[in-house]
Length: 176
Image 1 (cartoon, rainbow, N blue to C red):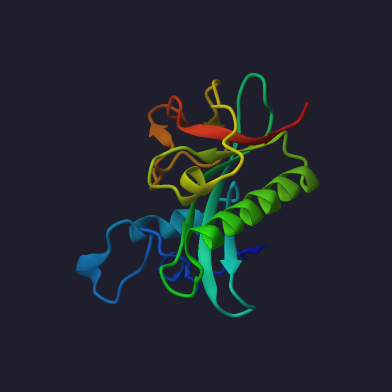
Image 2: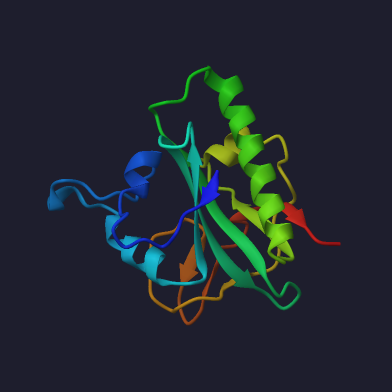
C-alpha cells in the first residue's frame, strides 16, 4: 500500500480498484469519473492504492483532510474499494486485507500528525463490512479543509461548507 502521487497522467486509479470513480473508454459511460481532476488538484485529498505486487493495483482509499471544533486535523476516508480481479481467498482474505489497510491508515495518520482517522460507514463500503475494528461512530461534524468544489463522495454534504453527513463515519483511531 502507498500514497499515490498526484500525477495528472494517472487517471485510471479508479479503474484498477473496482470503485465507481473511473475513466471509461467511452465518454457516455463516465459516471463519477468527472471528479478525478478535483481529487488530483486539491492538496487536501489523499489517494492511497493497495497493490497485489508492485505493479498490480487492486484497491483504493480516497481520504480527505478535515477538521472540527474539537479535532484540528482528521483524515476522513470515504471507503475501501477493492477490485474484483486479482484477489483470491474469499471472505477470509478480504477481512485480512481490510485489517491490513486499516492498520496502514492508522500508522499513516500517526506518522503525519493527524489527530484521528475515520472510515465511511455506508453499507457498500468493504471496510465497513469486513472491519474487525468497527469503531465508534463519529458524532461531531467534520469539515473538509480543501477547496469548495463539489466532488463525488458518500460521506459529505455539499452546502456552504463541505461537511460529513451525520453518522457517515466511524473512528479507526483517535488520539487521546
